[in-house]
Length: 99
Image (cartoon, rainbow, N blue to C red; front, top):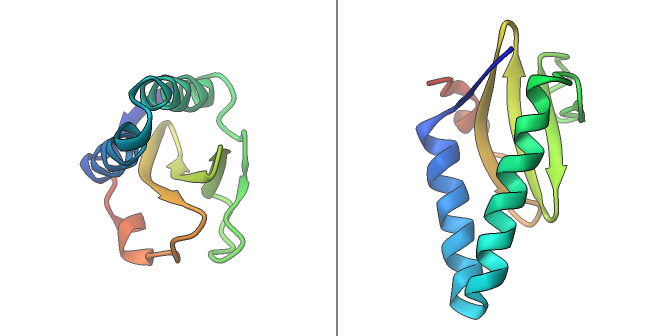
């Protein structure tokens, strides 16, 4: 199974890392490394996580990492569509960007 991060997902992950870096650069590096590691598990276990309740479609799933939700759609390729903190409302427009 192939894993592809959308540009938006990369941007959101870098924003989160920068936010954490302001308080603790070492924690930010650890967080980012952990995020990549958690998401890479999807290649072997594509149904890890749960369907996104607000969407209700099996192909849209979320993997919770810390206080963040990673949204994705899977077929033969898993697309990491966005990375969002739990405190932020769902933006359905972010789920339309596969590449």
